[in-house]
Image (cartoon, rainbow, N blue to C red):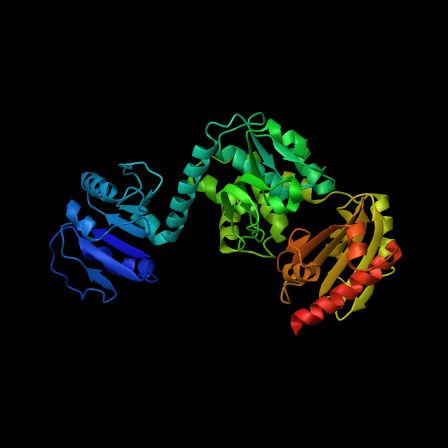
Length: 462
């Protein structure tokens, strides 16, 4: 990456050192001949060319991988500089520094951002490079979807808050509504917290199946990727996710950021970069999506998650969030918990609980979260049989091995298992599990799960 800094005065040179310090090359063009009273910074190369001439930038072989910073005393000079630069490369990321925030923006384009000098000192300019990148990607998505009559916003089975909020965010980013961008899932929402969220925020979705996908011009996936759906979904038009990527499918556009704690953070960045007004409803959904996927910024957190959380917090309805977060446990769930916990096993700081057959899948991860609070457990592995599948939820305290790596290694298949450092999940047809691991009765499933994870953690550590 190369920075090209165009200044009408050298006064900002030493301040810009802090901003451009990580760059391989920094070139400075001064717009007026001045005598420098301080030594020119060694890491900044001064180019004695006229910044208002076209040839100056063609000699530099200006390209979209460069970064341009401009500070001029008048808007006319700024406009001239931008006009010349954009003729050489119309996509180069550019930040224009203004003397005050009341100055008008001379040119509106995705790759151009404006900051007042006060903002420069208060805010890291690197945020603007991110904003420019997100605006460019937004233009790509909007061009891709412009002529689509409808777009299915597809989320995982039993959608969680992060998926629901991300779908709501993408719909808003595209300027669509429930008719032209409906949410869809192959499964029902079962967790009481998520049902509360949908009811309180008036979020609706449609149950779909592979055959009904022909009714939609395009499919966008949020917080999930095609392999999750097996052979029924070999591709998607648009994908936003923060889970480990797979290259075994086709797509037109995707933005996958494994370092982020929530997909809601990615969509929040896009909305903010494009200056889309966040309603209280949307801010509440996105904030709740980040809270649930990061356990209130306590798990898998990236600085971007904190930035998004800070943006959303004053805009959200916290009374609604409290009502979403505190659903009651029904007597059947309590009975299942008590019965299963009486048979808990702790081996090598791994706590195992098998629930047997359950009527609601969300009981399994809820118990896994609870079990991690039991003294002596660095890991909790909770399994249960839901419909025709064996479901295993894994949690750990955060400073040990990666839960996602462990389950992927044990099952050797990202299609059935995966996750993050502190939490992971495996879902496998019960018959396939029994055949794969050589057991003949469901009574032996609990013992086999214990054996697999004890051995898997031992092998992973060696």
